[in-house]
Image (cartoon, rainbow, N blue to C red; front, side, top):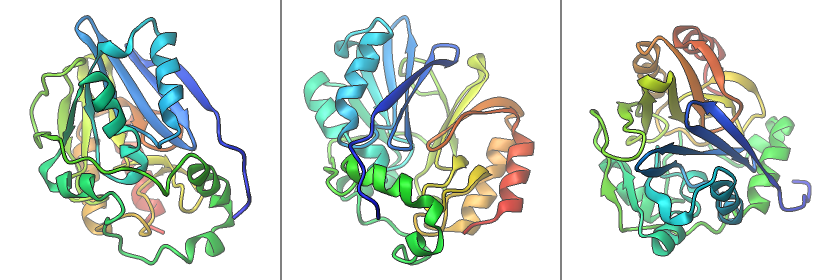
Length: 256
């Protein structure tokens, strides 16, 4: 794996109304704002912390405005600064019960295929993997003080998202729909970049990090049912259009 400098972050404002994408080390976190405060969806990697504070300031907010951190799934690259943020701001951290134990031990995740062969088989993934490593991917702290994220219904946090249960990548994976904003934050249920292969376009993440590929593909039906949305993935750029088309593309791509 090539040596890289610590990656910088880019804030993409208003990727959907009141939703901002912080892109760092090929991983996305989202700040969702309304009149009651901020919700952060997914917590990046350890080195994301300073960039996150800068992003909060850039949209005219304070760290104290952070009310909630919603974790779509408890893999290390989405849990990165959760414990640190909760300690600093007192925000609640929500994760589905099926991923609560994984949030405590973020490296004990299930995956269908061995991880070690992927850098050799998919050299296009090396920049992403090296960047994530430089951002602290090997040193993520788990967190035990979480609150349950329901598998359905509206969550009482800023932005009032509706939970769409999309298991498979992990068994507690949830996506968050914002119908009034025409957007869904899909976590790693449906990505536009697979960091394990370097391939782009709508797809399910490789078996190196997916617990059950069959279930992951089946769960895409719940996203397809949402119709036209801006898909805000955990990795890669937003995808805009009829989600049925994105889901069809993911099925064609299969699982590496």
